[in-house]
Length: 203
Image 1 (cartoon, rainbow, N blue to C red):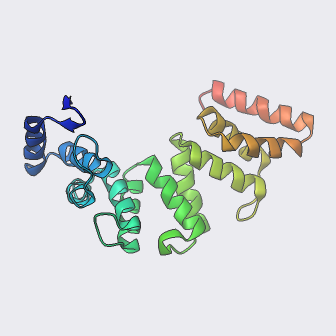
Image 2 (image 1 turned 30 degrees about the vertical axis):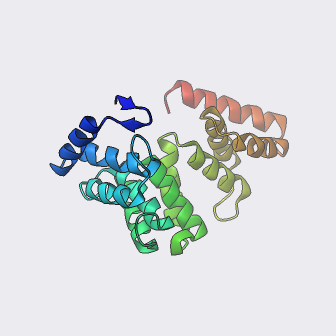
Image 3 (image 1 turned 90 degrees about the vertical axis):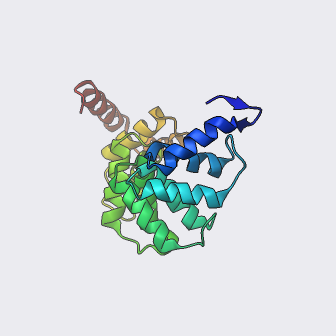
């Protein structure tokens, strides 16, 4: 969008608002995002929540995730963990990888008054990791390497941590180094070869 200084041109803002009022979900989401970030318009969490709610109710996963964050932190709306859990779940079920990771983390830690649940934690971490979310890949790798809440699986841990590194997660480097230090060279080479074969076969 063309902007004048740091603010969007009034005519473009009006057009965007009109589209949003008429039910255009992308316009609603864009306005919510703009107001939440102060991007092209003054920062206004109340307006952000209003537009994100409109888009979230029309099943826009990204809007649902951001609305969940507003409820979790009490920005623009009264803090409400039940609403935060609801919208994170909607976004995760809609395929949003970031929301899936957040939901997995909530089930792992009990954040936002979520009842910890290992099965749900693994399900959402897995779905997010399968979409290439590096944070979820790191989380799975650590869980499988540490065997605190799931059965230890060094090979799977190696693969997830390696993928997390490939997707830009710096913290995964330390975790992989710790894992590799307790593996014998032959085992480490076996894991590397197995992962290479899987990647080459598209698995």
